[in-house]
Length: 84
Image 1: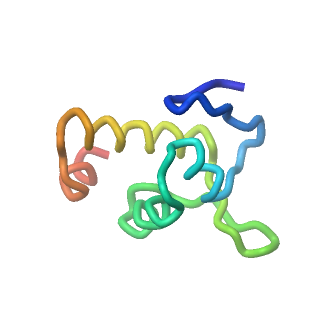
Image 2: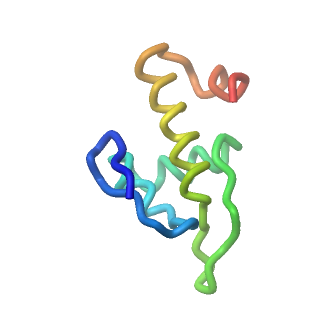
């Protein structure tokens, strides 16, 4: 398992739910939903219960980029869309 910014461990599973991503990045699940609606983060499928599932490696990479672009470069979501 790898550690990310918050010091939380990344699960070995390839697919993760919104809540798991939210915990890893210390954001609300609604933030993950927003990024999905805006097309920044793509879901990889659905669980049997209908939960959105995300490829953990891709999602972590994209969320890290979004976080860095917002914090360091102070870019808006529309500017980030163009870069991703």
